[in-house]
Image (cartoon, rainbow, N blue to C red; front, top):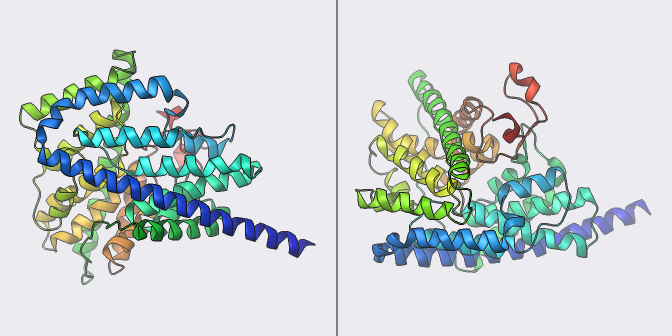
Length: 416
């Protein structure tokens, strides 16, 4: 009888991974094709940037009228995993899709991971009632949606799986979902590729001869990355909190944020800081970026996300990290692409409190020759960034230092 129950459960989770993997991979493919279309359209018609305030007004109106129950976005997924209460409304998926497409069409500086993760989590959770899942299994099902969404949007199945397991609680990994999350990530990634998605290709970084100065440079860049990640989180949340106090009407907040970005564009903001910024990310591996590049992207993204536009923060964090590493590299006699890759993953690690997932992402995107350096930089950035995060609903599972033990069990939003 016990063997039969195990077989029944195994069969169920195999079916669940196939269904969630297919759905998340397909929705990510539709989203990425749409994102590619609107990005090209904006780049060919920069006049569209001047309509960003109007796009903000539409996004704000949509969420005020139809999306108040899903306005927390990624944080809502984390909270439902931590303390399940009610099924995530299906409307989260189309609302964040539309909001993100409008944001990118008119030049908002945002990413794509938030959209893929929210669509994946919302789609997966719709089956929890249909399958009559208990609380623990429902948690796993939402994690599958996060894993599939992240993996398929970036083409990194291993990092996508571990990100889902690592992001919910700082310092803890939910290994009970490891097997189904891994299979879901792999299936979602392959399904997305079947829909003719071509992910950005990055250079494979060659290993460098070990030296004291090399280790010192990696440690220093990891430290700086942690500080930059902390600043990004603080500034984004400050913009969000301040705009809520200054502009009580949620419909007007993204409108005002759009006005601010249009003003910056009029006075000279380069178009490279709009949208995802993938061309600049690629350039960071080829030529030295000016020191202010990462800072400008940080500010423009904080205004975009903090004022209420939709998307995500991860691709802008890649931009910030790669350009930071590129400008940092001028101080040392090592290949530029080495530091761009280290910055790419380490800033992300500090801003999301997911150093293991980010190390694995570095391996998947840039090859495993410099795994040790990815791990060092991500670990240091994770520690230096403190209990800050772009996800305020993360719970402190294991404090990063002994004098912070009193913060264990608290949400990041309760601390700052």
